[in-house]
Length: 334
DNA sequence: CGACGGATCCAGATTACTTCA
DNA sequence: CTTGAAGTAATCTGGATCCGT
Image 1 (cartoon, rainbow, N blue to C red):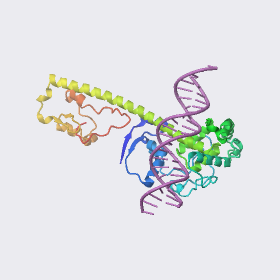
Image 2 (cartoon, helix red, strand yellow):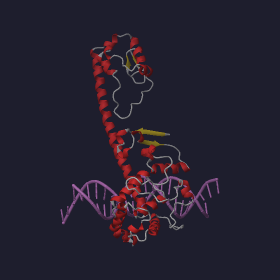
Image 3 (cartoon, rainbow, N blue to C red):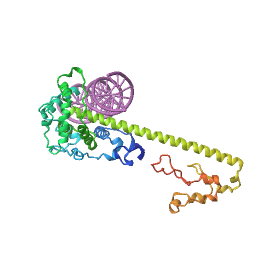
Image 4 (cartoon, rainbow, N blue to C red):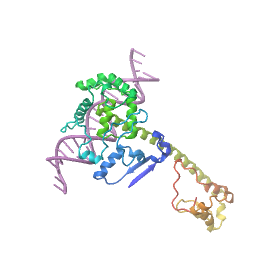
């Protein structure tokens, strides 16, 4: 079971997503085994926000050829998540099999892996194993970043003494990571290591960057959704106010001039579903969906008192503008 | 087959640092 | 030069899942 609240295009300016791609889904259901893992993958991939954008079967590698013209090394394809865990094909060979548990220790291992890729933590330029000829920009950037980071990276390597030096990723590194993120908001271990290798970063840094990036995306999306819902609320409040006013006007009119009291009883009927008054069965029939389909022209308002014309005016623009107003429950009224 | 513990990944919250007005 | 806000890299914590025993 899933309850979906579609927010329409107003909330999807981000990332150029199509309006129909934004769904605030409230998923309710049992999760077991693979389902749970699948959900995790989907959520991690941002499926909660642009589910339709996420292909059911993510491509094997990140395509990074767009702006930076970089490619993934010719690595073997990404295995299925379950297979990933089955036999650690995605673990870097340099990671010791018995490697250990906490993220700090994992980080250490990854440092080891990174060190295996890089002749020296601070030796950025020469450590790029990929053919980046013609892409000296990134290479230079990585070299520059390596140079800039040399102190912090060194402090990472020498115990750091709990001092947390914060490096700043270079523009090109960020751009490269952004490109990767556009392709996949999550990384498998191989991709992580390859990306780290390309950017001369530690895999842990790449992992952290993706985690933070996902968090930022979600935050931004939440803010946009909140903003949109606020606007919807304002519009609905205004609509409610207007309807109340209209109702009081009608009541006043009724007291002052109860014209329809003189009408034959059969010509007035209250629609049970929308609680509006239909002037006569013919009109009601004419306004039925089928009749409307065949005859789009609304009943001539001038045939009814002006207040009725207002009452039976064509459907107003729904406050949730981008969304087509859902058809009312079985009703003969407009 | 189920229980258990280790490994891993992730989200969310928070901290610490950098940059900039 | 100082300062506060914003941005973000890094850390911590807890939950979920997988896998081997």
